[in-house]
Picture 1 (cartoon, rainbow, N blue to C red):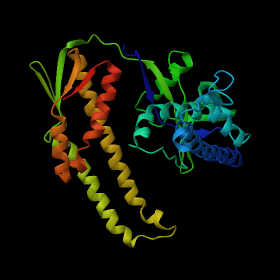
Picture 2 (picture 1 turned 180 degrees about the vertical axis):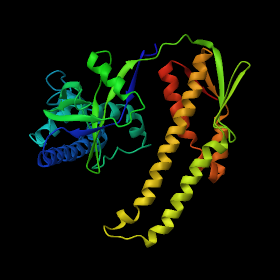
Picture 3 (picture 1 turned 180 degrees about the horizontal axis):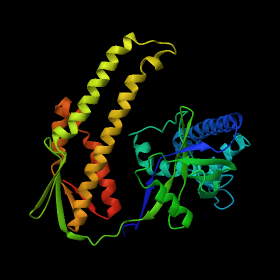
Picture 4 (picture 1 turned 30 degrees about the vertical axis):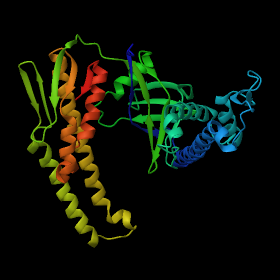
Length: 365
């Protein structure tokens, strides 16, 4: 049976809600320490999980030796001193005791064990290697680490404590559903699952995961919407005699190519820019245009996919058929200009996400 809930991840900037710069810096240093310990713990956990699974191959045990990755107190063939899940948790907990909240280590351990089990068949076949975690990884924590989540009218922000550290959110010009989702969490209408904290350039970002009910629409599975991605139009959808073209080649590419041209001019001009603080300052204009292009593409593809799903809901189409996608991807790979500028994969990802949220079945032809 198809699950009735859907998990959504959002990115929210956080500010440390303390009065002095010294206190805020102290908190930021602590968060960077937690990030470092999480990075080290993650690599240790996956290494131990792999060794546990491959112990027979590593030590070439004889057929007469019986072993089982289980607690020796509960299974006569068990070779572990505790449960398998608890082995990796106790290992990192003993190593980093007092340096990081145990809630983070527990959440990290559970997340990595789930991911490891999912990828296990590929590990055994030699089709992929163990995941390598970087120093700037986001570290997870469960909802139990958050307390006093509420909306503060004077600060015009949502405030909460994470392991007794006060934070407030910065939503900026929130044109999405972040505020609505947080309000529903406070009211108990939406569940907040294991979240993560991401640190980047001295800024703090909260990546909460919301579990909510799927949208309920009066859709008919027998009504099929046929959509295709083309070079002239980003999306063309047909339901019976009704047809809709979403976006145009000129409308999508005009702004993107203009940004790329500006980026090229900035790249040429960077040679004569004042260095001052090194390469970062010389490339500041180029980075700005790169981010502008990324934001523009992200927004346009969001609009296109939203119009497609709204058209399906309007006509009660419960099935969305994406036609000839392999051919379109092949054409894009042959044409460097198309591959660079058309963003097929990102558009497909957004369509699948919005279709799942609306309860529409996706079929890729």
